[in-house]
Image (tube, rainbow over all chains, first blue to last red; front, top):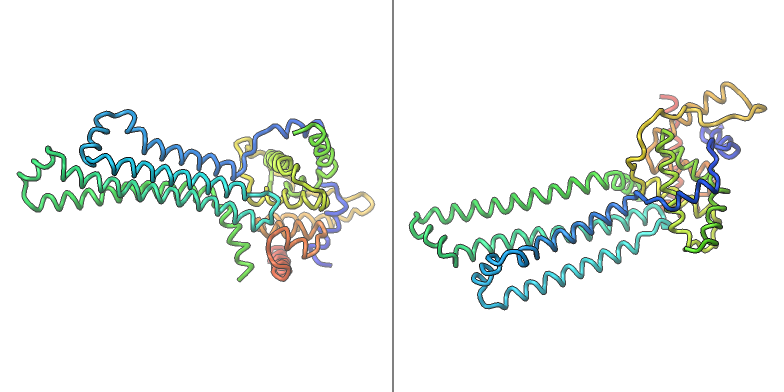
Amino acid sequence: MDELDLLKKHWQSDGVEDKHITTKDIYPMLLKKSSSIVKTLFYISIAELIFWILVNTLPLFFSDSYNQKLNEMYGDGIVMPILAFLSYAVILVFVYLLFKSYKGISVTDSAKKLMENILKTRKVIKYYVIYNLIMAFLSMLVGFYYAFKNDPNIKTVFQDAESGTFIVTAIVLILFTGLFVLVIWLFYRLIYGILLRRLNRNYKELKKLEV
Amino acid sequence: MNKELEHSFVELLEKHQNIVHKVCRLYTNNYDAHNDLFQEITIQLWRAYPKFRGDSKFSTWMYRVGLNTAITLYRKSKRSIKTTEFDTVQFKIKAEDYDDTEEQQLKLLYQAVHQLNDIEKALVFLYLEDKNYKEISETMGITEVNARVKMNRVKTKLRTILNP
């Protein structure tokens, strides 16, 4: 007899439950909160949306000198509104994509489909983070460029210094910005790596069957 | 959600709770974790229940939600503090069938099944529940041929674990 068939014989006939749950026990269970991975992912994506929106907008509301500096640097009053409009449009697109992919997650799909849909949602969040990191990197560089070009204090410093100093400073700033972005990216990878480790492992196992 | 729906769900779950217990037994190894997973599966079943159309059997629908929760959705919550592990004997063999060697064999088999990975356990679970390969393939999202191939590999793996 096959080993599993022996188990099957008892599995079918045996009442595994040693603690019978009554209807009275079930009612309170319906009110408890889920601790599923989708819920955690949902909270993280909301936190990320809010975080990056705050990072982009808070300085505009709370710092007059920051606003003044921006106006001085970008001068004409056209660049800033266009950038703001574009960044809000991108946020809206991401909110829509996230909403759509969360709606697509259904516990009654097959195991593989469910995993794929969760990973798809995680991808949307990933792209949102990549977009923000690229924007952070670019805006830091552009900020440095305009500061060098338009800030009178910085201008004086570099006029007095040797010509090589400027290039060295620029390289250091680029490296520093790149490092900053890289550290944030690694932090994200770590968080999602831990959160989705089991899911990724199981998804790979299912995919392996298709090869 | 209305009371009638809630009532019908609770009645059905109470009646078919064995399926959920069995999933929990396969995927956890202590009482707290078992209860925690049972709780999470109940929540997922309840959330999905309004869309349950009754065109499949409630039990069949439960297999899918139960396994999906155990394999994919479930995250150990803080509630599940590790306590004493289960006694490995999960089966109370009926008195008239009692056979010492068989009980020993079952114990080892159950330990071996616990060493399988999540996907393999799911296949074993559906096999033990007497699901055919079509149902197994639909639940897992793989082809019927692959379900068969994998099941044979799982059987070989179990044999190797039992007779190293």
